[in-house]
Image (cartoon, rainbow, N blue to C red; front, side, top):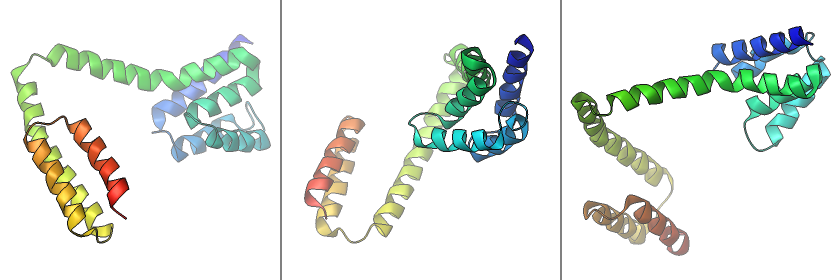
Length: 172
């Protein structure tokens, strides 16, 4: 039983280290799991079930395969192997940023990103507005009022929420 748990952990750790999740991880997991832990029909059922349930497909698929191979301990070990790589990566980045948060160059970097992100958001909004059809003067007025509110330092979340509600009510 211990060897199968170690094998499950290693397979799911390897799959999640070598892929970015999604279809790539399903293909890699298919190669690793079918025949070793589950049959092909079990794997197909697991993929179908994990894609219709809410939540992370990768974690649900891992728990299914692990459970099919070694019961509840197998499901838990497979889940641990699945969540360990992204968790370690996020913790590493957070600890690095925590150490660097008082560095002047990082503050300057963040300040430099703000205009770039703003321009990207404006460009994206323009593309959406352009393809979204004609909204007439009411759409332009709503956009202008939102821009003015943001320029006057209104809370951005509140501006977006109010603009969205008004857009739903007044725009076709």
